[in-house]
Amino acid sequence: MAADDVAIRQGLRPGMPLAKAQVLVPGLRIENADPTGDIDALERLAFWALRYSPVVAADVPDGIVLDVEGAAHLLGGDEGLARDLHARLSAASYTCQIGIADTCPSASSQGFRSSECLLRCRLQHSDSTRRWSPSCAP
View 1 (cartoon, rainbow, N blue to C red):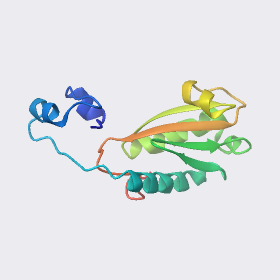
View 2: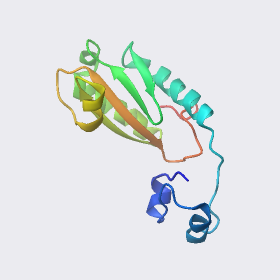
View 3: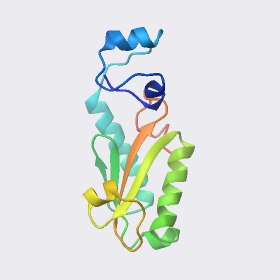
View 4: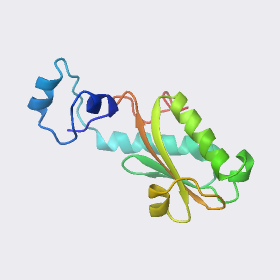
């Protein structure tokens, strides 16, 4: 079982048996997993992110990676680009964690640092049934 932020606040946890989750949250809405659809939709969101960089890729299962070297200055540098990306995603009800660093693993674990080139954004939509689709992309 997967769980979004709302489910976690209600006491559910990823991996919890479904029967236990249904006892804890009466009326729980259950959706079948669609990993292929999720990947396709995440790639559509990565396509949307081309507004920030010409080099963008989906980072399965829950992120996008952008090479922002040479592009960040258009939005006031790395931090300006990250703030703009965060604001647009937040306005579309995504929760995102953004890191900028020289390498993708570093970007996953670090906050903003200037003059570096990779941005990784981990995403979760507030409505877990909505995928990374143009209808919910910022």
